[in-house]
Every structure is written in C-alpha cells, then in structure tokens.
Length: 91
View 1 (spheres, rainbow, N blue to C red):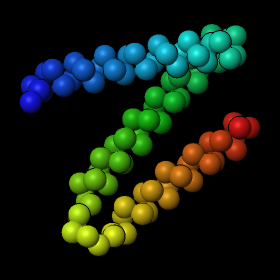
View 2 (view 1 turned 60 degrees about the vertical axis):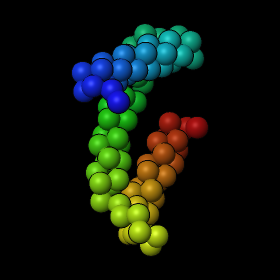
View 3 (view 1 turned 135 degrees about the horizontal axis):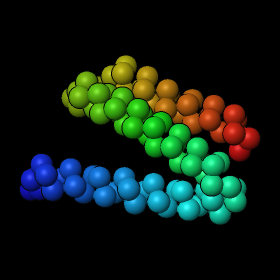
View 4 (view 1 turned 180 degrees about the vertical axis):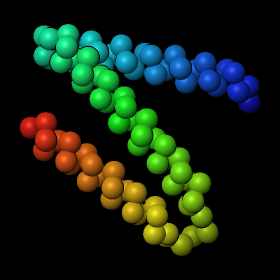
C-alpha cells in the first residue's frame, strides 16, 4: 500500500503530465497559446469539480445489489454536462 505522501506525489505528477499533454495538443489544434491555455485551465478546473462530486457520490453509494437514486442522478448530470460542453464548443 502506498503512503499518503507517495499517493499525493503521484497524483500531482499525473496532473502536471496531463496539463502539459493537453496544452501541447490544444496548441497544435489552435496554434494560439492564449486559446490553448484557456482550454487547458478550463478543462482541469472542470475535472477537479467533477471529480469532487464523483467522490462524494461514491461515498453515498451503497452496493447492496439495489440501484440507488444518487448514482443515476450524477451519471445523468455528467452525461448532460458533456453534451452541453460539446454543443457549446461546436463539436
């Protein structure tokens, strides 16, 4: 089992790696550092917020074989948010 410091370090390096990869890809697509920065910052802020709710949902989920309301509620919220973001961005 990992120590808390090791897990925190792994989480931080994983996030930094994701930021650099997305920044590079966004720059290749847009050719504009300001736009690629905005895309990268927005994406990671949205991910942190969604992850928070995802974790809270898992804490409320009871796995006794019966579906629960909150699991499906947050699943629908997540899917709808991706659809809205996709429509808003023109994808």
